[in-house]
Length: 595
Ligand code: SAH
Image (cartoon, rainbow, N blue to C red; front, side, top):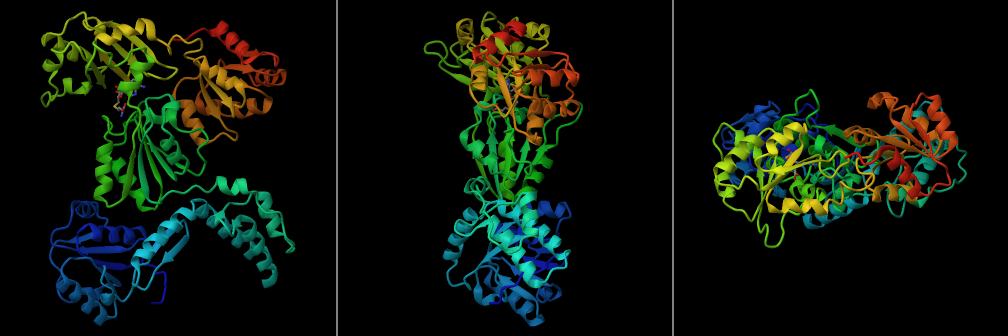
């Protein structure tokens, strides 16, 4: 077999067969821009879907003798040997390249296993003699060639263009290519990194003498690679960024694209690399949310491009989050996905409000329900009457702000004691957490009086009484303070957090992800060590809509002067000799607990 890379872009290709294997081949052809006709009497729904969207031509009938001759390339993936053989004979007779899946004698070309990193393609094949070895090798390469290679490839292409414009001799060119390659690729570990501008400049002008090799740390930093083309449905937890799981963090750190809901925005890591595509698909004020269908399509598309995609969703992806619909869409498209569960709000939000959702002898059952069902026109699926009859239980209602009056009416009608304690908690686990407690009969009024807005969750049941004693989060000194710190190091950030403040740790230069995080909830101030930090965040002020009243807590006179000179009106200078706990006290003395 002679290895080649085919340009199938806009070429007419025929795929015979309409099952799961055909779909996988179809994904490959489409990803490279082929114009594909699928011939199949009963194609699976995902193929039908592609046809409906005019992405392919679908011919719903069996293969007819001779038709393979009209195409540039043909793949047969049916389970009928006679059909496969016919396709092979037609194509071969007409000089058309043909591949019958899993039948090497009926192939004039093979499809290698491959690993793709941007423009870098590594193809692996065994002439059909040991496919098992190919599959395992591919996995190895997947792990060893991290995403850094696709960026590296781009920088290599840029470098080549520059060299080409320099009018050098062949020998001089090769010396510069060597400098680029040897300094950015670790020949033992196969790690690659993009050179800095200064390094690149040095390679462009090198005289061929050896250079210092890249530090191992940098190369390793850029190399973290699970599989490609994988969609991870990750639960971000209810809002407190500390409640994102370790696996969720790992997937985010290795992602090429993150598709996130607004509810999950506070949990995006601020240090997410600039190269990571960020797609917000949640409801924005004044805008409509992206329809679920579109989100599904976006995930499929990104995965088809071979990207590692994180679909970041509030709470747990499968709890009233439509995560399972996304998983169904990925499964139907034959794409790899996984679920990284998250802390669901019905468990965490009451806990932060001092309410355990179960308690021995008080609540021996906890129900999670979508309260929205109570006001739907297509008939109630929820048996409110049954829940009303169970006093030893907690009822946690998602999406219940508008429907609360209707829920309460149904529960009271079902016989629930009107004195049953209840709470509605908005933006739980965050600096904006707001808790309203009342008896169930009074809760709807109390929620309106407090002007409570979604996202909010209600909990009804005897355990709500514990909040009198267990309100550990809302009562902490600095609860409600959401402070920006630039790359916080040392104990100050820890102490502030331990006292209930939420710290948004922003790296410099400011990343796109940290802009999303800063804008996800109101901020109360910034803590600055020096004027460089003041400058960096002052530049963000307009984009983030901060007014001049944003507090600047300055830990040096230099920072305070710079903030004042840039027009910050609310500047408080903290002595460098202040201990972390003094800082906490100063902030508390000025602003108190903002609950
Ligand atoms: N998958 C999510 C729920 C999505 S439905 C989860 O597992 O938590 C959206 C609803 O979740 C909101 O209407 C609200 O009822 C609840 N919710 C999510 N985050 C919340 C928070 N921080 N505080 C209060 N309720 C929250």
